Amino acid sequence: MAYAADTTVTISRSKDEIERIVTRYGATAFMIGWAAGGAAVRFDMRERRIQFLLHLPDVESFRSTPTGQSRSASAAKAAADKEHRRLWRALGLVIKAKLEAVESGIVTFDQELGMHFVLPNDQTVYDAVRPGIEAAYEHGDMAPLLQIGRG
Picture (spheres, rainbow, N blue to C red):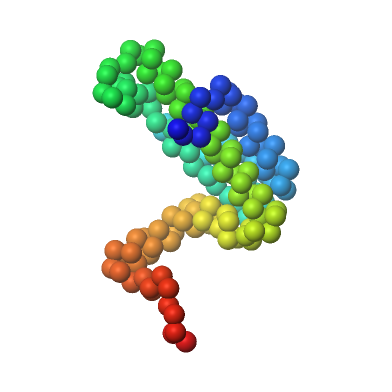
């Protein structure tokens, strides 16, 4: 079962919780925005801008049950709302876990959040390096997982 699959926590409460989390860990600016199909959470921390995008499936994605049965418009809306609540809870969990891992010294700030840094051209580090990562795996340019005896 997916995390928070049966949550009744409202989206606005999850958003408020995310804001409290990033503030507690030292954010100096915070925003949530949305557009068709998704939402973005951005915050500034340690002289970096961090962005998390959240894909929010539309109601039409829920017109059928997982077994293929049709849903009424109201049932599809209810299923979409339920999934949106779940996704917001999951995003809060991810952000909290990442910031706590940094706070606990398990990883550095740059290690844990680096792929979410927003660059001056408004793309994330991940978006900038993704083509190179995909090419390395596509062409098999990866080093062996374990290199024993190589110096």
